[in-house]
Length: 207
Image 1 (cartoon, helix red, strand yellow):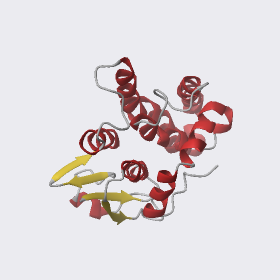
Image 2 (spheres, helix red, strand yellow):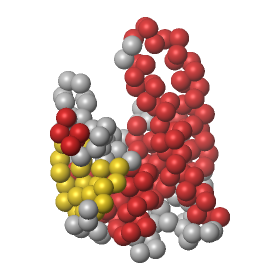
Image 3 (cartoon, helix red, strand yellow):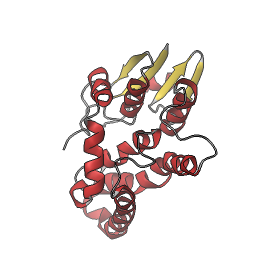
């Protein structure tokens, strides 16, 4: 049985969704953010040295970092589903999206979040952050024009991994109609809805 250490309103929601898509049994250990600081609880330090989520434990193997978890679950429990065949051009595109989500796309979103808390003190950084956001979200939007999914003609782990980017940009999505339509299609999937039911309230899955 796979154990998912799940933190509310976090990247671990996409891990629950993936497990539902795969139909793989799992159990959840719930961790709640501090209501004031929004930080993860100290109990997660017993699971991950950085006290971060998501973390999964599968038959004694502990995996952290959501991209690595998506890759691990699909390789070990996917049975050939949710990724293109290795060695194909689509597989290389798929692998790039897995790394791009956290390697590049989330950085300006996180900078926007933290710099925004500085008030006027963060104002000098805002133009550069806004420019980077437009650059990355525009890239995602362009990549989805005329497509239902990021790679090929069906859902892959790339869509699951990248979903958090669109969710984190919820107040900007109206400017990127292809990305907005894509995330709404993903939300409508029965497996996504089952993941929400298992994981509990998730503020980012909102229009």
